[in-house]
Image (cartoon, rainbow, N blue to C red; front, top):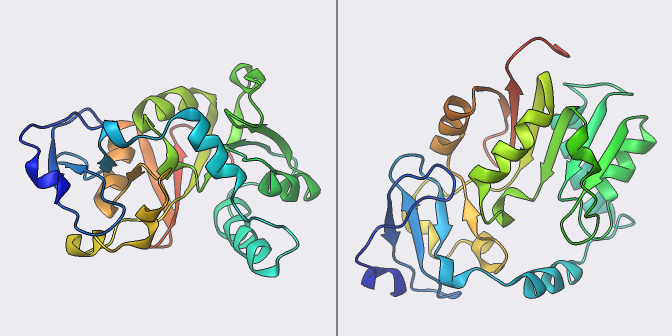
Length: 228
C-alpha cells in the first residue's frame, strides 16, 4: 500500500490545490494522490516516466488505421466531438498527434485545415503563431505531466467560440475501483479526470462544457462568438 505511507500533501498539477493520498494494492504499485479541490488524480512525481521511456512506450502502441476497430474508434470521436461543432475547412490543431497522425490525416481528407503537434514526433511550434476553431487532445490528457500549464498554453490559440475536444477515460465513479482500473496500467498514464473535474476546468478556464458522453469524450466551448 504505497500511498498509505505518504504523510504530506502534494500540489495538484491541474489546479494547484492540496491533494490527499490514494492507496493502491494492485500492480502497477505506484503512489497516487487526489485533489480535494478539482478531483484530479495524479501519479506522484517519483513515478513519472522519463522522456526516453515515454517515447519508447508510444512507439510500442499498436495503432493501425487499417484495423477496422481502431479506425471506427477514431471515427466515433470525429462524429461526436468534431463534426457537430465545425465543418471543413475549419482550422484544427491535433495536439499530441503521435508517431503516426491517423486522426489528423482522417480530418485532412474531410477537408479540414489540420496542424499537428507532438513533443516527440512533430515538435514544430509553428502552431503557437496561429488560432484554431478546434483543438483536439485525443487520448492525450492522461499523459500530461502538467495539465494546468498545458491548458493555459493551448487556450489562447483557440478562437472565440471555438472548442477544446478531449478524449480520455473518466475515473471510475466508485473510488475503490481505481485500484484495479485497467486504464492506469499504462505507465505513461499519469493523471486522470473525474466528472467533477470537468466542472472545475470549465469554471477555472472560463469554458462551457458543451458535450460529454459520460465515458471518455468532453467538448468545451470557449467564450465569445464563433462557429455556433
